[in-house]
Length: 64
Image 1 (spheres, rainbow, N blue to C red):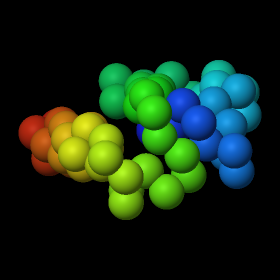
Image 2: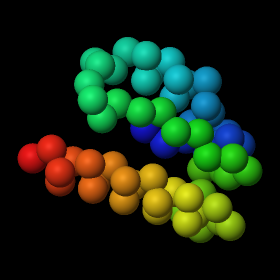
Image 3: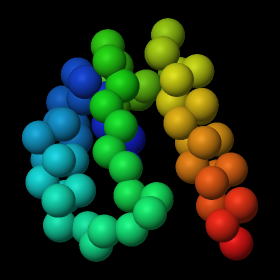
Image 4: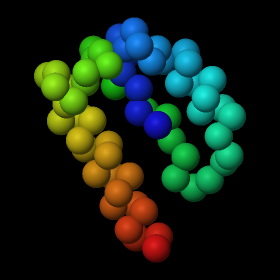
């Protein structure tokens, strides 16, 4: 799960609550990206978002 620090539509506190309710697993991670809003994919730190998504996909590919 990836959440942006300044996301007013899906605030980090809500993401943390949902994350705690998810079942445990080797790929379960909560990543908070700083200085971003709900539209992080269009903002200056979008490369961090893309990097985290790519890491998730790479790990999934290696375990399957």
